[in-house]
Image (cartoon, rainbow, N blue to C red; front, side, top):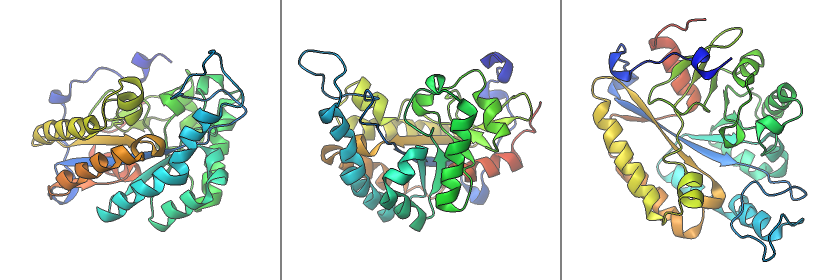
Length: 293
């Protein structure tokens, strides 16, 4: 099914207004991506290229660069979540649950939402059996948490032509890969529709720090500029803003203070709802437009 067959064009100013509960005008959700990088495979991303080029194996400097995030960066970021009582969403590889049990335990203690993020950190178009990968990810999350995940984020936002269909058939309620709106939207599948919840490529530390090579303070500046604009637009109809972080990037010592500053600003607004993806889904399912098959 082509993207234009899954979702038709809809200008945001022509829709029926959406209202959040308790007088809130916008929702903000924060997604922490926790991944396991297989040391026997080429690294998904690199900070340092080898002197003679190529893809060395083992790639110690790039594997260690990422591993720092799960050993140190995550715990540094966690203090910010605790200080501002941010309800976290853990987008986690299925394999990472066994690799990093203390991270899983910390998220469970804080009642974070667990979201499927592929069983391994690889392009979904290169997975041998996509349905099995999606199902296996849900199975290990359920085993670890007692609850099957309701949301899905493809590694690198990658999908095949069938991904939304398979997600619905495997019991998922929402997906985040379709970064095309400031409100949730329904996507058609071959069975029943699935909700896409606004994610972000703009306030995403991978894009900003690793691809665009901005200085650390840019994350704070852009996040607040985006927040203020969306907040203004939310007066007539609710909007959703996402913040996306990775422990090996935003958990680096020189970046953490800018992550923290964001919530000093956001938490001062009493009409902004910090929430999880499943809370956004439940709200939209109840007050949004009916899904069409």
